Image (tube, rainbow over all chains, first blue to last red; front, side):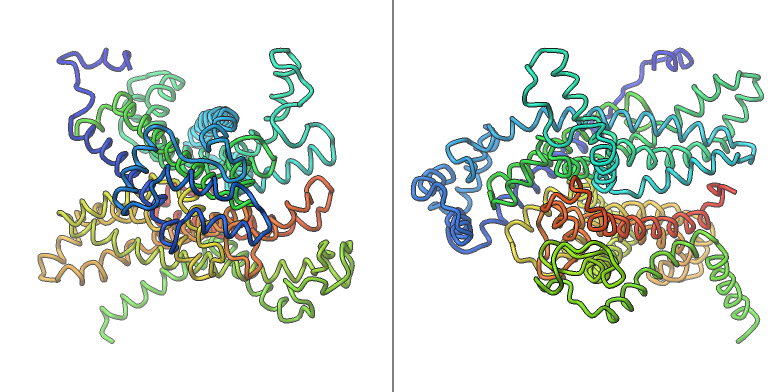
Length: 348
Length: 291
């Protein structure tokens, strides 16, 4: 960025206008609010005390947990005997304090405690895979678009393109299943289930190796499935950029190919695709949750699966809110950084 | 038919020919529709029932009698597969059609009409795009418990319309400023007429491509929900088959004839639809073509 400002002396640019900032933050708040409201209303649509209804459902399945004490504690925490609006404000204020009630399954433990156990695994898996696949796909796709700019498409490019197209249509979890079958069941190359060998001692080299071994396949299934999508998109954008006049001018100026690729073509390919990353975050997170379930990776996804199996409704709700919160916050952050990368956005 | 009308008719036919001549669209359609027809025929021919426990002997390996064997509860897996394909595709397409109609309507209104209506629609669209749909879907599905097929399709539609709506809006905005639309407005056509006669036909390849994406999205969300164990349990779907396989740890027991077919069918349908949308995209934007 400092490089680009070298070429336009004059007054420093204001990166955001107030309008952009307010609009974006407003969107964030509204989205969160909608998600929270849905989370609040849906269980209360069923007549009667929502917690008793849940417990009754469990009881029919033959699970006896908590009982009187649980209902009493829950009713007190969420003021279930008060009018709706009181309940709602209490719900909000509890949420702000990070209090989402108790898990039915692990009763004395709060939902938040249990979530915190899974969260590091999920965040680790997600952040690494998103960055790897996004950066990798972007470079690959842009390069593919760049190399066939004179209308020559090598057979190699076509082949890679077809593979990418196929892979990008695989839901992450399907790819995960295939990877488990090939690498765990057939080749015995990677361990299956869990995030780390329970016998490994934390802090040792073996512990880290074990973590990496357990994470390889889940990560690979997310990266492989995503790489293709980003590559295809980057290629499309690159092809569009190649038709632009400024590229023609750059060539006419006698700039080196490599420089044109990096400074002109790549930059203008990256910027629009970054906004698509914001949009894709939600589905990537959802996909990662399903991958965790397939691999019984100890993150949020596996917690969710257990909760669904056991009808642990407070846990399901907490996972839902956590995912919404994580995704919308990440999206907000990218959108707030974006005007620094592309000054045209904030100015409008 | 005067000369002008005839020309219009011919050009429309030509448009159809472009679609059929595009190898991608044809391949994709054959893949998707072909499998659907095959599944329907097979579901009538199969003597077994997809959900009846103990219908056939348990844990059979693949054979001529049972091409994909049977599961530990004594159900013929091939019969399950074809029934599941039909159900999953029907849920996906129902959700897709509903979501797509909403998206087209709102997108065109927002893009063409503009003003306060546009601001409101855009804001709602943005909210629905930002919200991770699976998170909300699983809350609703978990509470409803015994969810019906049509409820499921509508729920999927609620989270499927937003993104195409945004894209259609921006397309309408671009088209609005084109010369021929301005000309139509000057010649006294009203808004509805312009949208239906001039804007929609110009967006057709684009609309088709997005429809395919919406269906893929809905089917993927459905499969994901079923995999977790949420969703209509009264019918068998591809996601539910995977869930059953997962509960019986089929992946690490090497029961490849059980879990791989539903997985491959899902991918087959997705790839088919994707190729269609890709071909349509090429018609709309010829620069993208890889020769």
